[in-house]
Amino acid sequence: MKLAKFISMIICIISLFGAGTFAQNDGMQLGSNLSPFRQVPQGGFYDYSDPQAVNIKVAIWGWVKYPGKYIIPSYATVNDLLSYSGGPTDAAHLENLKLMRMNEDSTQTILNVKYSDLIMMTDESKSLIKSPSLKPNDVLLVTGEPRYYFRDYFSMALSVVSVVVSVATLIVVYLRK
Image 1 (tube, one colour):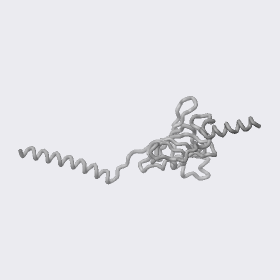
Image 2 (image 1 turned 120 degrees about the vertical axis):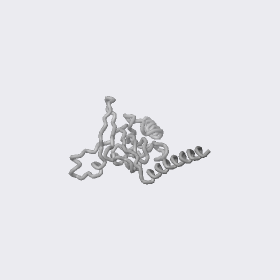
Image 3 (image 1 turned 30 degrees about the vertical axis):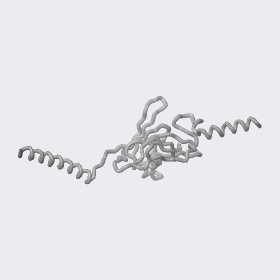
Image 4 (image 1 turned 135 degrees about the vertical axis):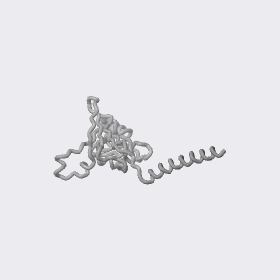
């Protein structure tokens, strides 16, 4: 009886000071942290863990609202990770997502993912298109390039015109003397 109480007390103490201590992999943790703070926008580390599930550590970089490292449930999908990160920005190329995965033999695999294939799945296409599942230490890279709008082009043109007018004024003033 005393041994059972002692063992249950040890398990309670360990679970209070870190639920991830029993995880086999550094990229995984059991349960969630006891911290009440789930997201810090400036920190780059976000915790969306599920207290009742195995959680994995992944990262998302590139053209998303909140890039960084995430702790998410192991059943989360690429769509879930994109949602957790605030969604892609308007400059993102969603047809060219790259999922980088470290293999057990220390080699790296890069999987190309098309976002349209992920969101347009029907029951028939699920068997044809297999959505890649997220694994511990995966990195999702959302590629893109900056988009320029009229105001951006106008601002650049106005800067060039301003420099040209300033140089022309300087030359005219210098020649008059």
